[in-house]
Image (cartoon, rainbow, N blue to C red; front, side, top):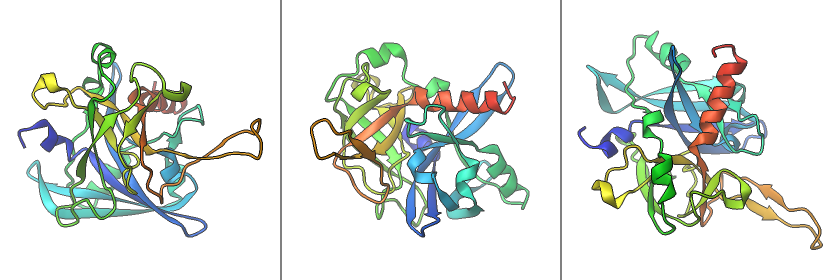
Length: 263
């Protein structure tokens, strides 16, 4: 694994959930290491609508040996009351949820099984200088588990490309997000999104933009003055997506650590 892309394919984890009403959802989470002065905390980041109200959840980890992945050999964790493990951004309007990753690792390794993964961190995040010159029409790459596209034999995710369709240095619809021109297939929500810089010879290291979610449906009222309702549904495909800026997810992690007394 010599390229950035080869390393990044091990930063994602597939999530499956079942709600109290029996409905099923699947999507993507990725591993982010949050560093403080005294410690480093690995977290899973995903789209909140994937896990909210989930009675049961399943994550699939890749086993490893001698610090290398074992292709196609997974370890499945089934978790009851799955939604209770996750922490939402203090601003409930943000479609972001996070949870500590270390407990999952410790649980698996306590059974004598080693797992393999990589992570992104602060150094992976797009810098303000780079963000300032990301143009509309630039390419972005995201990594996840779109239905019927990811590799069920190797258990590895699929890479897809989209076009940045709103100015990243501005907030689309007044929120910390950007518009992405790419069909968001079921299973892709929660994917990490990276800016593809032509000036860095196809590298996307240090260019983490944020978290992919499907574009919410808008339900309008009967009159021009009626309020619009945004409906998020992980079971449908949408013709475009939203990239929730990574700073939102980092804010959620910081809020969790503060609430739990770690910082």
